[in-house]
Length: 337
Image 1 (cartoon, one colour):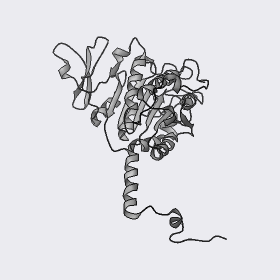
Image 2 (cartoon, rainbow, N blue to C red):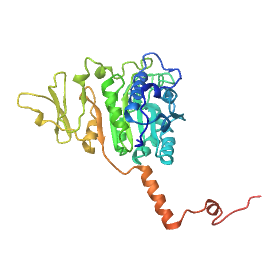
Image 3 (tube, helix red, strand yellow):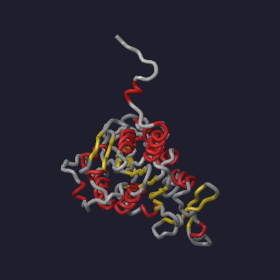
Image 4 (cartoon, rainbow, N blue to C red):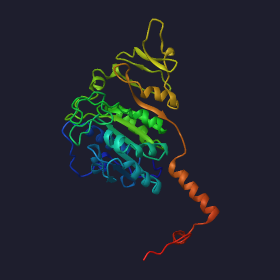
């Protein structure tokens, strides 16, 4: 995030004049609203902000932000955004992608942007389906999912986005939910203030082609009992009455009931700097476990564009600025007639 002082803005300053064209009831509306409300809080300027997307319903996002942006090609948003972030480190760069765009054809680009610790905020909208192309199985569709492309049920093991991001060494990894207003604002605020590779999975509903994909644990009346809200340095407590928790038996998480000799002192304490713990959390899922939401991992590491700039300065100090024409005509050359 840029540290330059900018004029105070409001949500209106970040909202474009384009008609929002998603299906009525789509979870993307809630995410868009959350981002538009967040940006003024980050103290950045629209003219110094870039939103880059690939292909898919989520990828219409740049049209609706009053910033610079690019609706790029399928899966390539992280690669394009990497170029922007390295060439213009003064800009705030956001990538908007989906489970199909980011984890299928774009999987390689996503992994390498994260491992390089490029200063990007990658928001992956996960609805477990290809929505734009009308309801085919995506990389995150559950095993056995019946869709237009898998009428007898998919036989592919689903990708776990958080596990991929952690394995790729992203320095900020989190999960939130499109309909959980307070939580998505809190999570995106933390993401926007992190320096380095940010990956946020947003569990999002496609009410046309995969309605209720996450409803069994995200609905308001069940989410306290079926989701684990992570807080750094605090024990892992959940439940309608905060009466349950997660205890570790070695590296295996256990759901326990507080009381009858079990106290919060027996529970696992969340540590955003612990890579192993973050990976364990990424593998926990309903119905066996409550679904972890919030920041799984947040660490500091040298940022990609700074390493690139330092290397360039080192070479300049040793060898001078160089000459592009001289380089092109150095060594063996051929004349083609």
